[in-house]
Image (tube, rainbow, N blue to C red; front, side, top):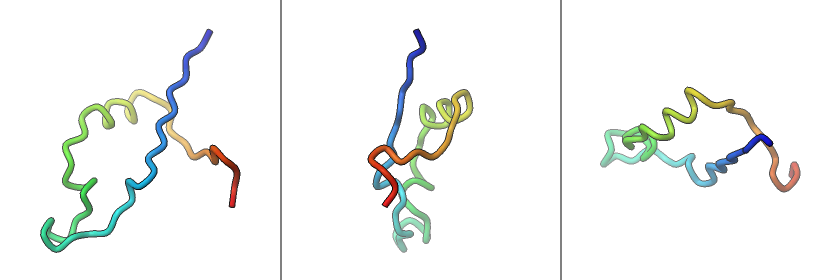
Length: 52
């Protein structure tokens, strides 16, 4: 049996902030576990509820 982990990054897209040198919070965040998942996993787009 295969196991699947689906991570929905809702809200990860954000605005750049002057206080962060015009970068987004995700651009300055320390994300070693997300980096590892994206490097070793299969990434893609999915519509979990339905398009539109």
